[in-house]
Length: 290
Ligand SMILES: Cc1cc2nc3c(=O)[nH]c(=O)nc-3n(C[C@H](O)[C@H](O)[C@H](O)COP(=O)(O)OP(=O)(O)OC[C@H]3O[C@@H](n4cnc5c(N)ncnc54)[C@H](O)[C@@H]3O)c2cc1C
Image (cartoon, rainbow, N blue to C red; front, side, top):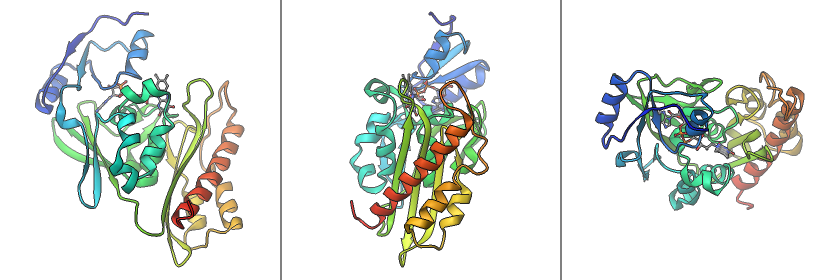
């Protein structure tokens, strides 16, 4: 299938890109193209113009900013997976990136594109919620940060305005003693998208959970935190009973989707099972057991 005709722009600065976006109300941003181009070929998307970010070098790179790490929107899943900085200081993201699609997808797809697209089965959203990341956006009205908790608003919907470009993601360092992260995913066997995926960041103090964040993707129309499971563990030791009880609460309040691949009930079950796996793994890592 061929896409409908469109204008194609290659700005080299954010200023140029924002001006093009303001002049072309029916334009779309192009990053890795691994979600947008298939939609255009199927004619599910027919933008009048594409504004390709590829030549804006400011949007690339992974930078140590002291107490957080800044990841440019054009950073590919492959670059996230193999970043030494992230592997040491924020290992959840390389782990999650390694689960995305296949090698071709990881070589082209970008973290900014994935978050802006907000596919309900994408992997990064769960990690962003678990990390409490902040997405940086720039539009005609200036720059702002959007907390991951506020970013995903519905099916393929985010808090980004139509005239805004996602420029970077800021993630915390999670390498402190007593801190453990993990991602557990049940992938769709063909696409590798998450039928259910759960990311966990747990902090232990005196062998009790001092803080915990759990992000769930794949199960509902958008990624969400499992707040009841988080609350069930806060202030408690991560023993087998407490972890199992918390995992059972992970699908509470989620409007789980049902489709030809997995019923709503099965997705709820998978969320609980993936939460149990991710909690156990994060707990082990918080102790430095592996
Ligand atoms: C076969 C296949 C398997 C896949 N499997 C998985 C998987 O297992 N897990 C997973 O998470 N993903 C998966 N993906 C999706 C992949 O990760 C995409 O790369 C990602 O969803 C979109 O990133 P992109 O850079 O390709 O964005 P594009 O396709 O270029 O853009 C996607 C959307 O985001 C907008 N956009 C892009 N960048 C920005 C920006 N900086 N600011 C504002 N808007 C922007 C575009 O306008 C468009 O609407 C798969 C894709 C394919 C083709």
